Image 1: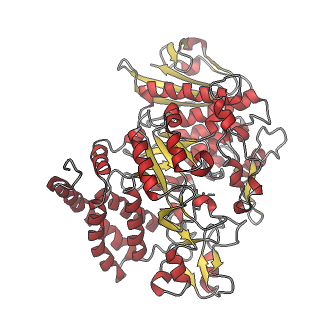
Image 2: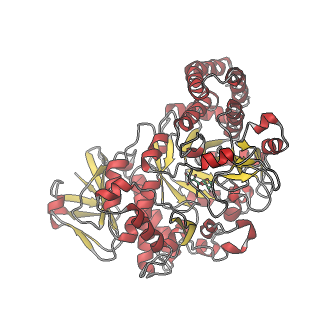
Image 3: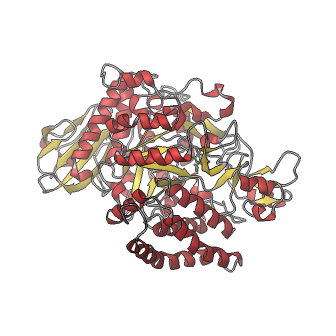
Length: 622
Ligand code: OTU
């Protein structure tokens, strides 16, 4: 690169080298996906020019980032990494408001900021931005695309990577492509799954799952009222599923993706990625082609925007979640199993399912990482494996029913103040909504236990390895929004219960530890500091540990201590409401002298370790 940012010969050589390396793999994948589809050749040839054009238009600072990241491709697994997520309007008003809050993000130590979808959307209900009318225009209430590029540059200068959704399973029904399809343009008709009558929809619906049954039954919606045609809509009727069996869709969406990457978006969150491919007679989820499509897009970025990282949002069975995670597919992924089982452990006061999952399902390929979260903007679904549960004598179906009852406060003695989501009377399925503080019982139970549970849940997300992701507001003990159902645009979508506006009062109280907000804020800050200072927390290696007590979550993080000596951080958390103990005998494999990292004091393991209710211990042992 020259000083004025122009492309030099060396840059061009670099691009061609990456092209040589990745383009053949891209074509192989496309042949696997599209077989002998005649449209494939034209698309493949056009791709070459498209890649060169987007790379040529990539701003100088991003090309510099491409270079830096090529020498540290797994930057996201560092122990200094901390993510946050927010709705721009609810948290800060607009993009300018986000810019003004950068000092607070720095106070928190954030290195990654997921801005919830900010694209142009239909009026009224737009699924919190997940109905995208244009990938190149923002909702004017939030800002402009130029502002997003500016804010992401400023965030980057402060060490914060911008994360934005790539909503690739569907567009809004008023996207220009969808409008053309509705008007009968055959080229755009092929961008979606549109059928003249109910014959194919009925056939598909014999094997698909209902995702938003409160919105509409099945997977299809009439194209318009009075129109005999049906269109595939996995989610809301205003979200039309894209037809990825059409190679033109791949080319068009690759262009939208590179456009976003060139605005300074460093991580793209692949929304609802499991649903990309549909095939008659299958559940139309997690089919092999869905993976190959993401792999093509991964190569597209490797060539034309190499700093870009993909995050998988597959909230599915754990065997399927893991299939999306690979350096050549999605480098990072939500960890829905750990999230769900953390809440499961708090409800049951038992650690067995979580300990099993950590021991058996935590390990990932090199060059990838989990995004560990306590809750997201979505509902909590109980995505554990029925087989894993059965091995411990637990019936999955009944256990999910118990967890739903527990977290919606219907179970006698429950501490939780959650709201049910998408209860399906046909199957008995449901999910749960609520902010972390509301679900953990800071208001419905005794506040001290509630605070303990909030800190415990975050401690797990911070210490198992991977990038911890805070839902901004949770660090201030934000409660459910009691007004959520008053906004007609929210429909009956109870997820809005846990998407409240910025909690100004709690924010003012954040250093006052006589308040719940202050206890949680300072408690989290302390744990985050210790995490950053603990080299054993680098990377994601985790070894199980049997604490000899069914109420204690336990695992080991092997590494090297600050003196360079091989060591282990033994992580313990008591999910029960009474004190428990790890016996000396259980700890006898370690040297007697240990250090409590959170308490900053020495410990004699021959006396065993006592854990007060909801407490966490991170012990450096040898
Ligand atoms: C995602 O979630 C988004 O996170 C939601 O906010 C959107 O509404 C939805 O896609 C449509 O864009 O069903 O309840 O993995 O669990 O993708 C949330 C499958 C959802 C789904 C997930 C989806």
